[in-house]
Length: 72
Image: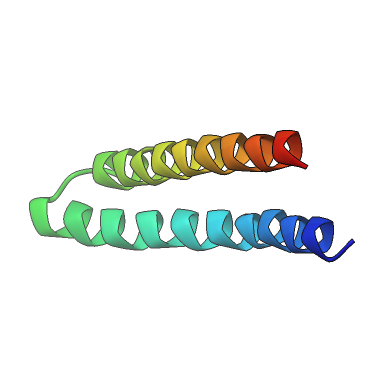
């Protein structure tokens, strides 16, 4: 029971990670946009880059959880 509870907490925390990454991508992208005078292209790129890395992290976590379930 304790192991499955920890898995649930990990995936609940991922929602918070996603929000933080989107906000960070928007913030840093906005800084780059202002520096170079772009019209939101860096913000969009940074958000998509951060989303891509988050999705990759999600796939790694899902694979690990699946392997742990097969072992038990």
